Length: 114
Image (cartoon, rainbow, N blue to C red):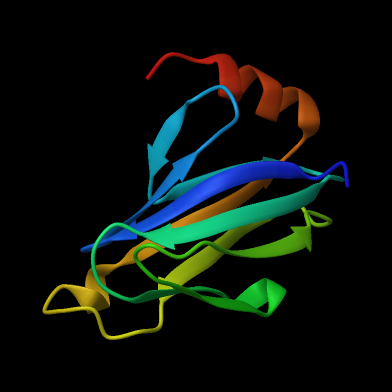
């Protein structure tokens, strides 16, 4: 119930992550250690599939449909995010990173201007 919610949008050929304060990142998902994370997932164009192997998460992203996934951010580190649904000629380059950082670092990062 108290998970941090982040909007996720797949697009040819990247992932967009939109946070509660409207901060937006491309191909980098940053979350705080020790929190439950809920990803609200959709697509802006074709079918994509968000895959985070380290957390055994794989959820399709479909235009006009919201799906979700959640996970506990329980280990500091950097993890791969991939698209596992062939989405066009740039599919193999649709890579992103999940960074789990200490909560204080996350709060500072969240307030930084891009």
